[in-house]
Image (tube, rainbow, N blue to C red; front, top):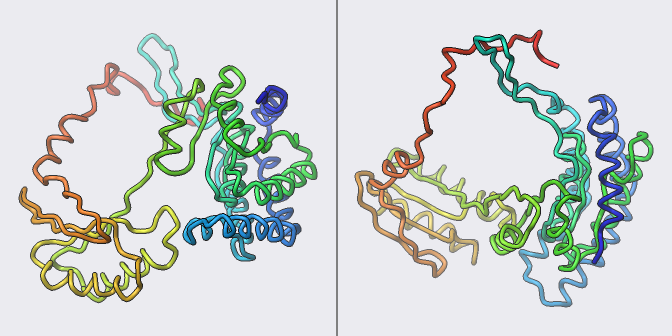
Length: 343
């Protein structure tokens, strides 16, 4: 598949975005949010077709939950864009700077990448989130979503592009590539056309992009959300937090995956906590462990998965291993730049 035309259009749009003032970008984000709400019925209709096709294909319910849109989720997408508009403009921000003894000024300044490619799984809300973040940071974006969310993504992008057009910014600042592996493969091959790729999804997707891309990749983590119950914890509160963090919406990436309990309270806490999970059916932490505090640990079993909790004494070794190297240019010799040095 050839994505040259779309990549060239994105490049042209990125040159406009790179010099667009904050108030114009923020206005565009508001217009995009308004367009999503105005086309809510179209979004829900398209999403219903995707969900029906997924159910017919035998897709797991937790994946269908990720795919599904509701009126509230559409409103949350619009609110997310409006929240971005309230953030400071990152473009031109001076991260740090100093003046050398010879008077030469050194500055690290945030600038846009240019064209960003994002490959992601069946999450229609990511379409709006990614487009908004790229616009706020002055970048054009090429979106490559899952085939299972193709209709939903098309409806979302059509609304976003309408908002861009109303605000006077290039509509090609946000483009959706055809769904499927051919488009994602073409995106990974588009060195010189695309400046950076961001994979958003599970470990398999991230690994495939990192290993197969000729374009620089910003690698994201798959996550492993922990809940730690200390010896002094309120057990009733711990139970309520665990139930909420795992069962409210198990499909999201910040759902708790590991339960870690201090040894001093383990015999009392684990039966209560695991019983609470049992009441909720299959919603149990993927890992369950007892932390003994002084270099010893023992594993527990939850959901048929048995994993060893890392040895406590090894953590200090890891910290030493990744200790930062000395700064070759100590700050003592630098004079920080004042506000008058900002662009």
